[in-house]
Length: 410
Image (cartoon, helix red, strand yellow):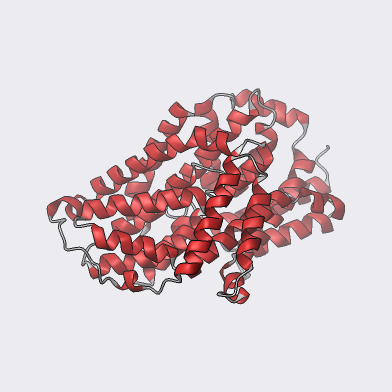
């Protein structure tokens, strides 16, 4: 397509939208990531880059439905007190700072493997901060451990984070195949997370790390609705089993969510209040914006030219994905890479590499992923400051190490 006014408009809308998504704000106007994505999608239609039919077709409904279903399941787990039970179990058993670090990292990583990592960070951070402050420990390394471990753990499955959900839908990789390939990367990454956090805060974990178990910690006294926790746990387990048995992932997730809405114990309004509606809007808008720029710019010649970058090489594709993820964020990076990945010799393996690198790249800086920002904001509510440079001394080397492991294992 010649570079005409429509093409120029598509590029301008794309750059403006992804700029706000990357930085979270725009000059002179009050608009967030979701608003920018919605406005960008609308602009693609208004400027004639896409027809309304093209825009509706661009939205991957499987991804939206999957994310909504997972949000409902996670909301019920939160409202039942499930996460508080996990935190109380940790508080009652650990007696040393290093053991506490291991427990926090494993809990954040394991939960993020099957639930959306953003939700895990949202719920776990205040519980862990309350616990470590009561124990009079330095809370910063534990906050960093939650953020980094949740990102690393989420690489293991399609339902671990939003970009993996998109990849699962775009690639058609079976849930079990995805997990079998990337779970070892997540396991190795969690071990490295503990090592790097402990090394960066040696005084906290090795100088005087012993303490009495905090069975009476405030976080452990949170009310738990045991019948709801049991019901939600059973539904969630059935959902995960369905994933591994080959059921359509979006269908299994939304059926599980619908089943949990049939309850006498929780007002529906409480569940709906836990849903991240702006995230769903952002996804829908980004699908449309990306479709617009693809239609305007991504010609067969462009795809052929990208082939000269040797994206079939795992190391090269990992580097390109990680770099792009830190420029425009991981979800937009995945959408931008779609036409190039689908043209590679082994697109299924390439998608697994993209899932690995885009997720692990989120640990590089404090602003590298939404999960990191959630932890920082929730920790700030307890007077805990996780600053950019303190995070960077753990996140940067951890990212390089875990991606290197991923390149070797995938």
